[in-house]
Every structure is written in C-alpha cells, then in structure tokens.
Length: 245
Image (tube, rainbow, N blue to C red; front, side, top):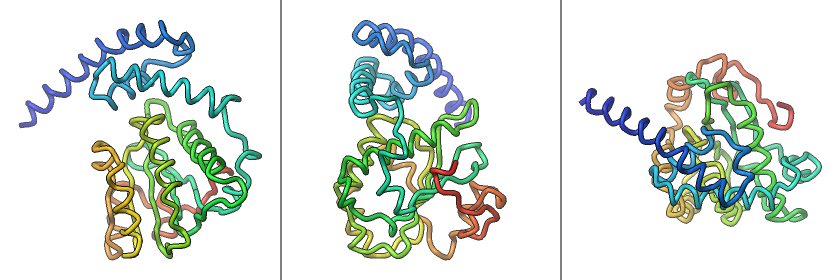
C-alpha cells in the first residue's frame, strides 16, 4: 500500500511539472500580469482543480481580475479595516510542527459590521490572509487555523460574512489552508454550521477537525509544540493580535 501511495505521489508530481508551463502559457497569453506570479502559485491553483489546466487557468484569471479590483493598491491597510480590528478577534501565533503559521479566530468576538458593512469585513479577511501568507517560512505554503467558538451566540451569527470569507479563501487563496481546528463549539453553533457546510468544497472539508472539549489540549499538542501553543489552551505563547505581527 505504501509503495502504491509513493507511486501515486510521484505520478502527481510529474504531472504538475508538466502542467505548470502549459498553464502559465495559457494565462499569460490572456493576462500578462500573470508573469508576476511564481510556479508555486500556479501549482496551488492546479491542485485546487485536480490538475485540470483549463479549469485552473480560468480560476487563476478570475483571481487576477478580482485582485486588481479588490486590492488595487496591492495590500489592505489598517486604515481600511478599523472597525473589524476593534473587535480584536484574530490572532497570529507561532508555527505548528510542520512549520505552518497558526491563526486563531474567536467567533464570539465577531459581530456584523454596522459601519463598514460587508465590504470592510471582506477587506479584513484579505488583510488577514495576506498577513498569514507573508509570515510563511521559505518552502511553506499553508497555514493552520483554530476557530474558537466559545461563548458564540446568535448575535455573532453572520451567515453572509461566513460565506464571503469562505469564498475568498477557496476561490482566491486555494491550497493555503492546511488544517482548521474547531474548538469550544456550543450546540447552537451547529445550526449556522449546517447552513455553511454545503458551500465548503470537498478538499476543505477534509481539513476541518472538530475537537472535543475534554481533548482540547492533548489534541492540539499533537500538531503544535507547547511553546508554540497559546496560553489559553494550556501552552506557553501569549496571544498576539494579527495587526501586531
């Protein structure tokens, strides 16, 4: 069985190497700005579309169009997301055992933005994802998330926001999520989860792990060293707001 898996991995790698230049030629002929992106980026879009060059190219071209429109200055500044930052809900910690940056989102601190609206929330999602990607060590392409739902109630329920964040992650940051731990989830959260779940693609679903409360620290320690684990989960690292990283 192990030999078969190794053979499959080798065949997949060979197909990726063959597909990348073909995809690059396709997208660069339609949008010259594609030249600014490296082969690893191309590979992530290919993997997201099961190495289908046509589908991956279409996905990547849509990403380029979105990026120019939504992030015209190349990045989201703090001044563009003041109300989202004031909720103090996203933190960026150390690295897991595979060298992937860790981010923590506290669901009970999220409320629908009454001032900046959905657009500011989407800008905040992009700001956070760009920040995570910029902190990845050389050779690393993925991050790990901890979604802490402790204290979550219906006042925190924001289906439009959740679906917008999911679309941004899946359509414009493919193959960036390594694993997502859902912790401290109250039963009422599952109502919102059932609404969002059908919109999660099959690859992303495989990366989501619900952790039982009585196994929280031990389960997280399987993937994260104690000195990189936040203090709130029994580790040794203080929480660090994402804007301070």
